[in-house]
Length: 264
Image: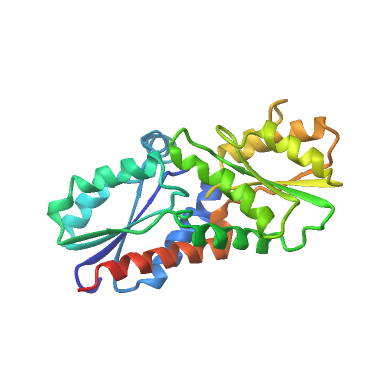
């Protein structure tokens, strides 16, 4: 480690090791490679997942407070905190509150933005996703499943669903598991388009529990079963956003922007 600078990458976390390696780990690796002069640290915000990994796998993932404590012990004085969160929602606000408790312990703290913070970010994210689905035919439909949140930041999902059409993708639809736009709304939109085939993919950093159960699960309420019940041929793509190189580049750009805030 050169100097007293450190980067803390904060994620919600996942209990699925395969998708963690393909998503969170890859994001962290890309950030670490882009900033070789910084000490690197990770933290997760889901204490439930942290406890599960420790009990099941013997893997200890630090909380935000624990990671910051380690940074202090290591002599870090300048901190960049980069969340892998998609939006400025509940998890991101709680993370900032945890960091602020250490506010006076460091000389400088700056935050990188979550993935979908600005309109420019949102456009670049959608373009990165569509690069991954460049083979999508005009007669096919792509349905992206986001998580959703009761936080007011949830409005970004409806904006993205509209932006996709504005970018020239009338056959791509984006909704959420828990909020608006809901599956019922997307199903009406998809039926109006009437694609010959539907691709289902998660619009989440990791393809974890929601992708495997709510999207592609055997339950009658899963998105796959609902669309199949409506008469559509459905194919599921179990791939988190963190697996897309274009998405990881955006996270690196956000760290670079946070670094500029620290310049004298």
